Length: 332
Image 1: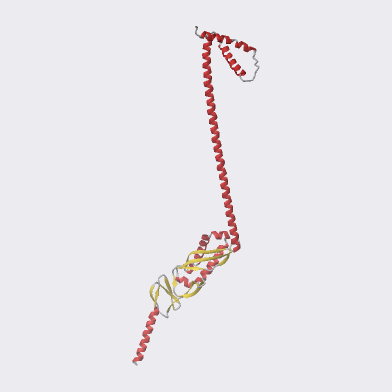
Image 2 (image 1 turned 30 degrees about the vertical axis):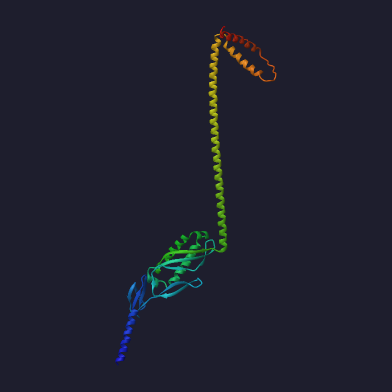
């Protein structure tokens, strides 16, 4: 009898220990558990030690998505029910999908989604399969956004696409208790023939820009060269102008000095001739004739000189000149 009693007490103690162990839930930081009592929502467990009633209270599981790589480097996606809800930011790397742009080009796009559960109750009760819903919503939204853009715009507007996707997804997942922080496009791969055509176009554009730059450089060189020639010619013309001006001023000053010298000579001759009572004009004219005759008879060739009749009268004044010199000589 005592042995049976001990066994019963032992079973009761073991049951109590198991019951107490099952009723203690330790929740990690940034995790939570949604607890139902008899199939109805009861409370949400916070981080730390929590006590529930086993059998009566049970955690409500949620579908979660996990990814891993196999030995060949391929990404494998696993989905399973979990009782602990991760409140940290999660990353979903969706498989590549084909989308059609507005100009009917089939493009392969791979997207990455960063989201965080902000309301565990909505994440559990408002959607049955949260990862699958987020994936399908992202794929359809991506098709809609890319379908409104051309291929060139798609390749150059990743930030715009990311912003549009995030805004649409954040608004749609708000009632699921999910906050979409950002969406990134990993790869945008047009078909091979389109890529080849784009490379040819890019090469042609680069050749065009190179030729434009070369022609602009040649044009600038010609402009600078012509400007240099223009400035050189202007400076040369200015130099010649200044030279002519200085030469003319020099000749004018020489003429003035020569005229002053001749005037002074004439004045002195006039004063000397006037003392002999001889006509100064006839005297000067006779000197001019003598100079002219000297030039005419100079040279080796024989020359016949014809003198005008009036010249004999002028030469007659030479006698007066001789007399003037005689009077000026001292008498011995």
